[in-house]
Length: 160
Image (cartoon, rainbow, N blue to C red; front, side, top):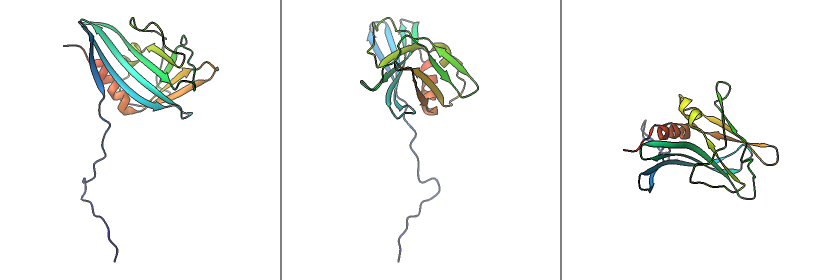
């Protein structure tokens, strides 16, 4: 006699990724909202992908995307812009730009001003980010819909 498991409809719930927007009071009057994801590019290299928005009092200092590759595996062309695309329908260039509190980053990391791109994304759809590398190639990251949703939520955050 065999045994089997029976499940009532709706009994199995697939957990959704939890939102990971964190709020920091880095110094008096300064608030930073941050989203951090670990993603793999199309060559299976691991990247830390950090979107952050910093306020000084009620004034936005910027919305930045910091991309950090694995040390020794990649060298990022830090002065080159990245391309953010939704497939064939929309595309943005994001300029390399450090926030006022970051004097420099190691060769395997870069940071970009993504305020325009994030504000113009209207749905939770996958994004492709092309990151220019020091060897003349580009790393291609796919940002999943749940992360895009989180980025859009983060962009809507404000202190108070």
